[in-house]
Amino acid sequence: MAVVVPTQTAHSRDTGEISVDDFAEFVRAALPGLLRYGHALAGNPHDGADLVQAVLEKVGSRWASVARGADDPLAYVRRAMANTHISVWRRRRKESLVADLPERAASVPADSFENEPLWQALRALPQRQRAVIVLRYYDGLSEAEIARTLKVSQGTVKSQASKAMAALRTRLATTTERRC
Image 1 (cartoon, rainbow, N blue to C red):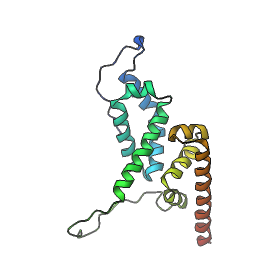
Image 2 (tube, one colour):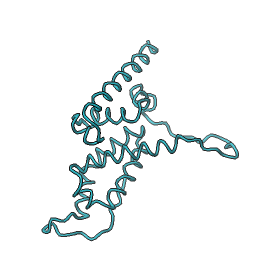
Image 3 (cartoon, helix red, strand yellow):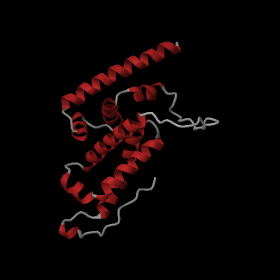
C-alpha cells in the first residue's frame, strides 16, 4: 500500500516545529500495526488497507496539529480508524435499491479467513467490543492504552472485553459442538 504524504514545506527540526518528514517516519513505523488493526476491524485485508489509507490521508493533512495536540499520535490514529470504520459501516448498512437485477453475480475471491470460526465470531461482535478485543489481543495494548485510544474509561474497556470474550466463547463452543 502506498501512503500519500501531503506536500508541505518541511520545517527545521532546530526550531522544534513538526515536519512532513516526521509524518513519513510515523507512517513507516506504525504502518504494519495499523494494517493489522484495519484488517481486524474491517474483516478483510483490502477494506482494512482502504481504512488505513483514508485515515492517514486525513491525519497527514493536519499532522502538525495532531502531533502537537495528541498525547499519543498512534492512539489518535487508531481512534480515528475505529470512528471511520463505524461511519462507513453505518453508511453501507442502508439499503441500496437498483432498477434492474444484475444478469449474473459478480465473483469475489474468497478471503482465506472467511470460514475460520474465530474470524466469523469476531466479525459478529458489536463494533466497540471488536475494537477492544483487537487492540488487546491482536495489538497487545494494556487496558489503560485501549481506554486512551478509544476515549472511554478503563471500566468500559473491562466490561466490553468481558462481554466480547463471553460471546466468543459461546459462539466458538457452539461451532465446536456442531463439528463433533
